[in-house]
Image (cartoon, rainbow over the protein chains, first blue to last red):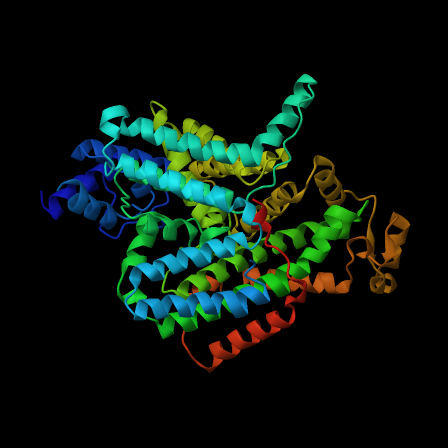
Length: 81
Length: 490
């Protein structure tokens, strides 16, 4: 799976979790700018992404995944190897 | 050894620094790490050598468990699963903390509840136990989840005992520290880091010795000595403590960051202008940030995940539980439970408010946040319920108002309402200077750049050299009355 394919799946997961089909998700989207990206939605997002890719994030990783680029990179570099 | 002592600044820090880089220069890498562990343990033992075996046992035990978890020791498959090993590790760490920190608290509560008469143990709190325990719990979980792997005991000992962060954080993670210790580039003196380290260390020293210790005079008198407080004294007491705690703990953190930078190690940010927060969620993203990250990652997240069908209400229950635990982590007293509970409730309110999409004026939001934080810190500081009520009650009682006598000429009509004029800050050993210092305190925390912003914008020039020199010399001249950091007791 290449980076773009991973990004597309992550993007769709965001739209599902935030219930907003029109939302714009880019690599730079982060939890500071997206008001609804709070600690609960963070867990919901990460659990949904884990299901999509059939992977598991460590507790110590979850706290650092505060922007889309970091999420995509971790999936590509560590989880889908 | 205290950061704010002559022996640390003029003997320990220079000696540990020069020997470390000398050994590295001679390519004696193992010796340099050994030196770092030795000096850190010396630094730890300076207070009380009695607890040296305790930290050594804790480090050795956690290293062995983690090594077994990641499979380097061929033991686990035969007898124990990875999960059981993690559980043993967690029980050990929490057990150590419970025994040394909470045992007397539990016994006295059982005695009160059941009218029993069990004897107390009167154990002195081993220095830094709350911090090195949390750091190692995170390490064990990270090892279990494949994030951390440590083969060498010496490296692990450096990670836990590195003296700048040993006593009171910032709470660090294995994966952010070990690459820095391993980097060849970091084994050579870096003059930019030395300049930056001395700069931030001097600012931290000034915050502690000059600012925090000044506010401490009025906070201590108001909480511990005064029998009654008038309205202004009560407010001055609580605000003085709020500022004392911030300048003390963030000053300590700055010194830790500065001392670590001398060794080319970057510690994580712990404070980011907390009193500029306009909500409690915002406050905890700015105050003791490494603790917030720890409790979010290792307490809140597993709790939320353990609930089926996630909802905001369940997440709020998890928030409240997390903050009750975080409150109690600070110390074995119901006052800390109340402190944690108040912040937990405030976070719940803040979260529901956010969901409601109601707008609030920013200044009003700041005002509510600051006052809430200030009031919650009364419970953090009070040794007993009666101390908290003395200060809090007087802050909202109109029965005992004394205004500065210089206002009598203009406001004499207020006398008919029972308001007196005179020395308004007598009970807290204060004067009009107290009010001026509080104004300075607000100016510093609300208008000035914080230490982290100063690090990011640092340039080696005439201005920063003079600021460092001024902060350092002024602090050194005030050092005679060196006092402990507040977080050493937690």
